[in-house]
Length: 301
Image 1 (cartoon, rainbow, N blue to C red):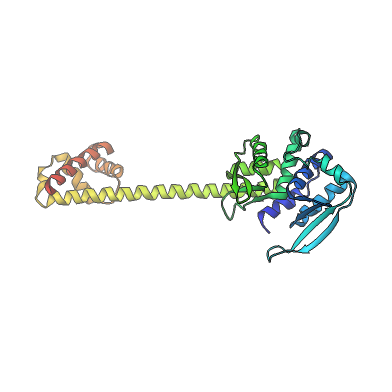
Image 2 (spheres, rainbow, N blue to C red):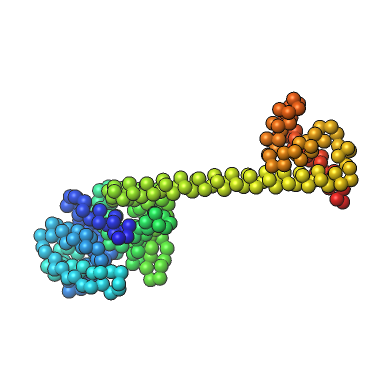
């Protein structure tokens, strides 16, 4: 079962009041309802279909006809179709379905907005499993104005949603993990939130560990490269007996570098200080090797 189905199954079982139910049903029928001689609503999720059935029955006291059909491909077992033939005008007017953008009373308070977004997710929402792929939540709607309306509604909660055209439809999407988790909270999908947060924290920790490991490896590589270059410079000077041209402190640095070829400058400065009793800092050692490098370059030239 996909993560989208798991979330839809969870929010399909929420206990809600009638005012919330009207906003949720308005969103559902607006997005996946087909109005002709009847109102026809289709879903591939049995829990969602059951939710829609109960919403219509509880609000309008009518029993929709249910038709179950075999899916059109191997991935979808069944399609659940609900048909409403009575009180059509009342339902369409009451839920503000005839308008592209619903009237204000559908979403005039906090609970109604959340319910409208819940209906949106149940009908046209999709969310990636954070364990398997990148963070992504989307809603596929039929026109740009409605897409912008949904995006503005989401962004009242600072969810940073955006709208792009996809073929002949428009996709409203959220990419940030924290914002997707916030949306799940808005829908009261708390089991999904716990799962999502566990995976998000694990992935963030893993990514941080990888970055630290990469940084550490890069530092090791840099230390080794620096040491090799310094040894090459010293060996070049030795080929002409040039070490005797160096002052005592610089010659000491060269001797200790050959003795400890794999340590960092900081470690080498501590070794020299410990073994000779002469305090030398990393910066001081760096300047000595610059002298060695300069002399080696003159020899090469």
